[in-house]
Image (cartoon, rainbow, N blue to C red):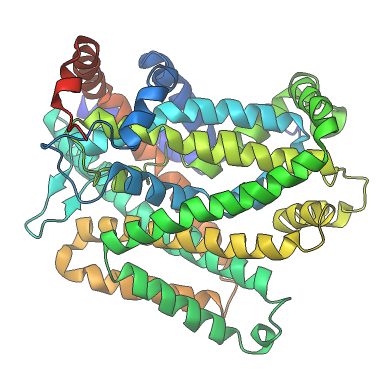
Length: 482
């Protein structure tokens, strides 16, 4: 059996380095790994009986602490785990990526983006549940969990020792690369690009930006998980509320046009204009946007969900369902409505140069400015917060992966390297590094979904046991009454 799975991995890895280009949209192709993620998300949704719908309300009760028990063990609360995970996914993709998706695929891409987010909820449930099942508490009290653990320990328990070790090491390496590039350099360079027009000093002395941001990042991440989680728990709700408030204001100004916009989204999803490349092209653009935004299937968020203080593994899996819901179904959809209602996505309109250059953040900024002139200033603040929160969350993902490979004694070295890359981002565009790190980030899905598929029986067993206890009323007796 080991040989069979090794052949499967080799086959998939070979295909990973090629794009599935269907020639439907100009300059648009779909990486094989995105198809791999989509198929996995749909399969897991059916495998677990649409768990993303069945426990949605119960998950909220867990999130607000209704089911705390004296036996709960972990480092941080379920809410802190969720906000830390969200701080990694709710970022510039929600602002820039959505605008680009609609300008390329048309309004119909929004519909398929929502569909992909819906199926992605089941993947997040699976990742977080496995992270809890196979997490390990180290001698220093810190928890090691996530893809590295359930790939190595989980597959070893199934008799695939060598396969699990290879997949776990590959996952850890991919995560470190993704954390330094997409989770650090890309975020820092985008913030600098957004601030430079408003802070002229950065044009001549960019190192100032790097040193200041690096110093702030260092203060948070050197403080460890608790400081990262506390910071994320404060920043994520604030930045989300600010962004959603100004976006809902814009939607409110165009309230009378909302029905037409919704009809346009649905009609274009199934019968798009020729310019968008046909129905298949629009589906691919929408799904790809959702995959990149929520990171469902990548396995990154499982690293922090493993640290949540819960008694039953599936409880944190239920909480993790909210990630794609908040990130993709709520925030990305609201951004899409802003873009559509203001009409800035029109390739023949006033912003065709921004569309041609794929300047998504600038396009969203233009949409905000079309209603209130100073909204782009607020948007810049949000961009800074989005990027900062993403960086501190990904620093933890990278640090745990680094520790898995090299041990706890070298943790500080990784953090210093991470800070160094933040400073480096102010001095160079590092395009080659960014392209390579994006590849590594997506590559995480390859070993991650193989592991989830092999271990799906463990998830089903935990879920069946928990649901039986919930139905019998046993869980009500366990919880702490407040």
